[in-house]
Length: 159
Image 1: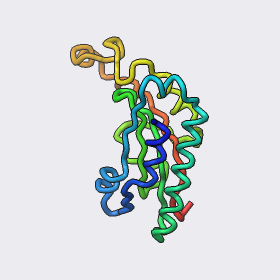
Image 2: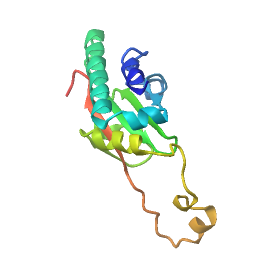
Image 3: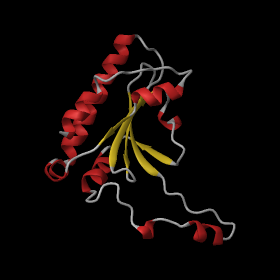
Image 4: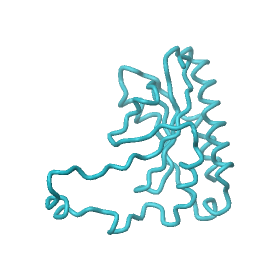
C-alpha cells in the first residue's frame, strides 16, 4: 500500500507559489504511514525507487506547467509521528521550510531505512525526552540539536 500512496503523490494537487510558501506547504505536503506488513515486506530499494519515480513525474508536471523557477521535491522521516513525509516547494535544498536543523542529501536510502526499521512508529521513550525541570536545571549551555536527514531532488526548471 505504501508504494501506491507514494505513486499517488505525483497526481495530487500541486501549487508552486514563491510568494506564498504557506500555501505551498499546506497543498504540497503529504504524510505516509505503513502497516507492519509493508514495513517488513518492502525493501529500502523498492521505496527509494517509488520516490524517485514520483519525483520524475512531478518534474514533468512542473515542466508542463511552464514553471521556470527552482523547485525541490523532498522526503524525510518524521520519527515522532512515525511517518514518511514528502513535499514540493519553490525553494532550493538549502532553504527548505523546516524550523529544525536538517541535512539535505541525494541519498534516500537512510531516510527510508529508518522508517522501515521503526518497529514502534510514533513511539518516543521517556528517556529520549527532556522534561521541563531538567531543561531549566541546565546551565546556560544549549541542548545539542541533532539534525535530521532530508532527501532532496531538483524538480524545477532552474537547477
